Amino acid sequence: MKKYWEFWLDERERSVRMSYIVLVLIGVIALLSFSLYKLYTAPKPVYVIMAKQESGIVFPNQYTKPVLQDFVEKYLTLTYSYTPNTVRDSLQMASYFVSPKLYTSVKYDFESRIKYSIQQNISSSIYFYRDSFKYKKIGEGVWEAQENALIKQYFGTNLIKKKVQFDITIKRGSPTKENPFGLYVYSLVANEVKGGE
Image (cartoon, rainbow, N blue to C red; front, side, top):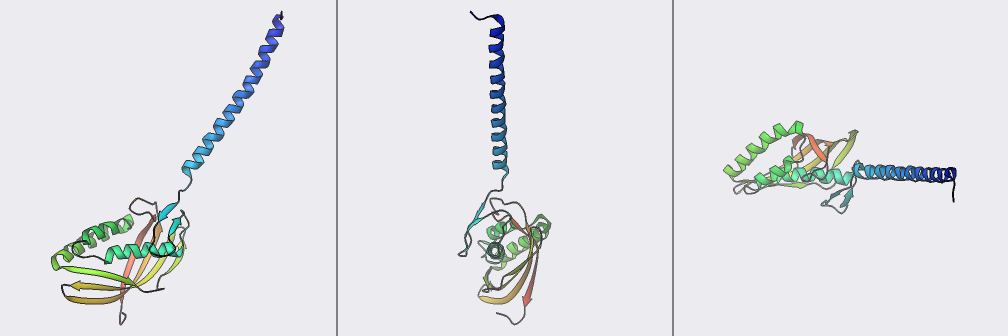
């Protein structure tokens, strides 16, 4: 039969073993919690289907020329390619690509364009010139882009063509369902180029 102090020593030994087990479990829980936190807060890839061969995955903070070009051309296509039946939806989709700073002025322009297109039966289409897209990074998450395009506007049976140079400032923001690029038009200047077609 064990004596009292032998029981006490056995209990103390078990207690020390249990303390080590508890410390190891706390460490494992802390490691798992940290891993879950990093997994949850890590930037997620954004899947963008582009019109060009370079389609694929776009990772946050990695905006290449094809991605920026596709963003600019998508915005300009939504803004300048429409019929009286599609103008409202097209310009509504284009508004998702505009920064809050630019939205109020663009909203007024879009509303007047919708009204004018429907009342006057105006259609518009845009065609981009090959290799005309240029861009440069001017800050963290900010780019200046330039694109040349031919805009054709149909007033009933009349056609007006004009070559336009677009100077656009793009800022990085958060991707949304409507704007998976996570890019926003911050400023836009459109200048007609004389004698061009």
